[in-house]
Image (tube, rainbow, N blue to C red; front, side):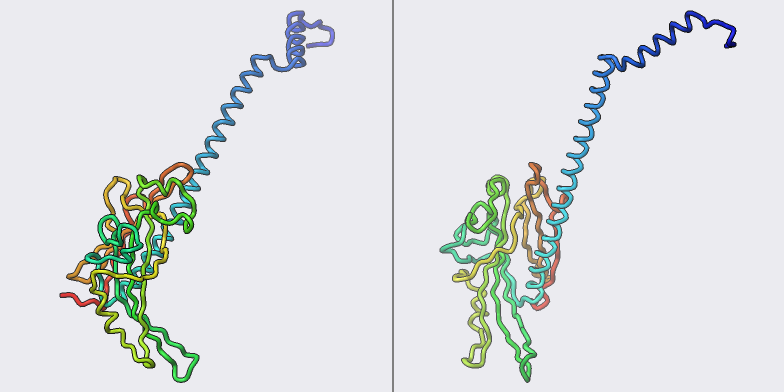
Length: 265
């Protein structure tokens, strides 16, 4: 527009209206719409954070449980490899005090091994070797039957309907000595007895399950006599932030171990 020309009145009015609107800010409707959009965004962000936290917690718990199962199977596997004899049924352990009358059945499955442990002490000359025979019974027991003074409180895990189990090791030993002379032959022969008594119990692990996600029973211990192979199957079950988690998720952790000192056909 040239200086000698006057502005169009309509143009001046439109510019004035725009300036007034700019100075007056957003209308109430616009503010409410903006707040609604912001609220939706905040809800989405919060939900995303909660889902991420739950996923991270579940993943970490699953990884921790897998490590525990690996350690558990490795420990029992080492005992099986050194065993000279293996049993699963036909025996009781501490029947007077153990749950389920000490039975080794489908309610409280067992794996019993007779193993020789040798320790060499090189601090003496000549080195001394200590040999001891161990009678070990690994036994699954319902967590709900475990003394409350000995476990971390967990009402969910102690609910019998959730099928959470613990694994205990019952043990007694016989050390071979020369003075007085002790060969432990009677101790070894007693491994075939129908009743084991006076054994010392200890907790091996917690939070195992007796059934998988489909509800099928898990057989934790199996023995194939034709190859002297023990099959271990374990699956953990926990309640993480209100969600029941199985680890491994698809099927129990399985390990086949050959009892190398057990004769087989």
